[in-house]
Length: 316
Image (tube, rainbow, N blue to C red; front, side, top):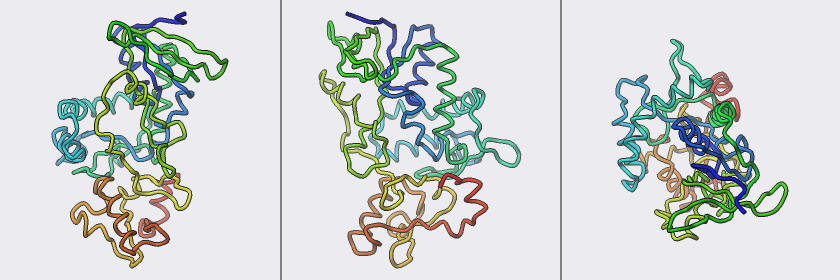
């Protein structure tokens, strides 16, 4: 029995899923969201540092520079056509989020503030203090409610329904009331997030279990670049609680046991603003070669001063 039918069913209701549902709705489709947790509990809400767009605050920045940095940061494995579209549309998307109610941090002259971030050639990360993801996930959920987009909350997507070599819906487990439910759709979009919970130590939420990847793989869709798992370079030892990349964007240093800014050996130009994979490998190399401290390195914010930390990094 099919419980419901829609033109578009978006599986996963974080920032990507809600934004996809909003766009499909505004294009005239009958769209619904399906999520194993409430949308505002999505892991998107844990993103602290910001969202990248070439807004023009830095004269040397442009969508082309943004695209180049993104392609380079992907080790040239990223879909360059998709990256070009992303970077060209990013400024308009950020302004749209602002118009929807996202309260971004501002410069003294009232523009959206942008700070340096890893692997970026210019300061292009727009931010809302250090709770950017929290702000965006709530703003997007407001837009979902405004449009009265139906949301199947606490439904665990179990299997994609294939018919005539097309995906035509989802079978999900109703976590609240029990039982399998079938939801038909002409188009199914998977926006289910990552698989960080493969690892014992991770900054990913408990919900990040790679469900969408498994759903796709089980119906024969190939998965690409599975070895390209991104690790966040800074967490609080020993708990693994994330410390935002914004700390390094604001000028924090990474030090080894000798008090040395060791990234000068690995990324002498970018230093602490190198891409996450470069910094993660550098940290592990320092630890492996005996320059770590109890299996860690030091993130030094002392020189930033209390005022700057409280203003821009108050969630630490």
